[in-house]
Image (cartoon, rainbow, N blue to C red):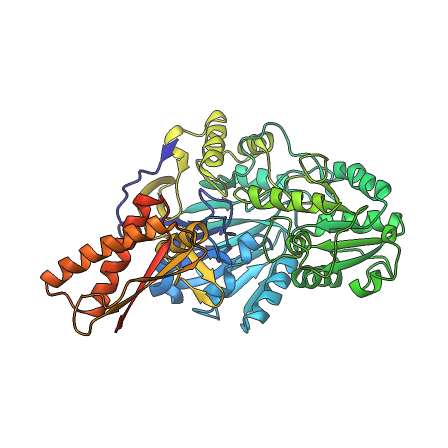
Length: 561
């Protein structure tokens, strides 16, 4: 495997006869998937998703790819191609379209429907291009072909990108379920034809590359899900991704078989299931789904609630139920079914919610104690199968953490892909393919871009460091009344605490340290208020770190006496 060095410089000018590939997200992480292809001076974007924040990123809603390298070239973008409708592949599209709203967005019916609902909330009227598996579409110098793939959401597509520089296949997220709930198989015949044609570069899903064998079929979950509905004396509360149509269908079928009415809880869940139902991707028997308010008049064993929050998101319905701040109150006899996998980084939040729900009397069923979820990603056996069918000249594993990428690269090598042609890269690393050979040539700027409420990109790592410090040690405000025009205290310092606890000895030590610092300021004739505030805040912070081993955010306010 050829791993990208850590000290790459900016790339040279793109080769006129080559194809440039720049991943801006989804490499080394699970989320914010986005890859940019460049040929003949034009750009093609495949996917544009979001990454969900970890506990170390308090206050952040989602994290975007870094569009910096595109900002001066927005007019060169021929299209945005979407492989499927999960948030980690479409959630960033509104933010890119805000910079140029008329970029055509290409995708399948359900994917575009989910995106359209999202864009309406952002007041964006997009240019949408509907394609289907087996279809073709031209976007400037890029000739696109779409191949059906099976995933945990309907209408998934792999995309073939043909240019004068060669042929590329981006698999998107996929698996090879041989008994899919919706009958949509990954089209291995199309993969075989592509292999016969000659595939220059394969960008392939890495999420399950460490897991041997084949991912089990969705149909194997049915007995465990039916068991939950058969044995639960109270309500069944199912938490899932709002886009996981397959799992919701299984829950609807089980509810109907047991005579339970179903209510959707949560805005995104209600919206997406309405779209899926209207487009025919979700089959709902007449009278099965009712408003939540009507479930209050039914016996608990006749009720199923389907909500968001399977990843422990603090504002989602399930977390608010666990914290008793939601109108749905958990009680003895209820079963909570977590019908999604654990995204890496969310484990602590999820297990915290499981404990709270259990303490409230619920029986919590999840992947760890029952077979109620199956991954939407191909395991090692499936990946090897695809390598042997496609026989790619070059391979670039995508969609996964570093361990997943390297495991996927090792599989490629075992099937005969030359070691130097297996590229393990990071977000922002630039790869050029010329004459059928792909090589790492540089790196572009690629930071994490944080969405915090209505602000995008204003939160920095320093901001997050302050937030973490606030959560750990609180804030301490120091009021200093100085004689006008001097650095001399007119009265003792005052300390105002918020989430910060310190003994009097520690504060006395801090005050003595400030006295010395202000004496030095007087000798240096430092009298400017902002400079004195910085001196006081820094001195107090250092003193408290030594005496109490705590580092609150310290704010100094200087006032004239």
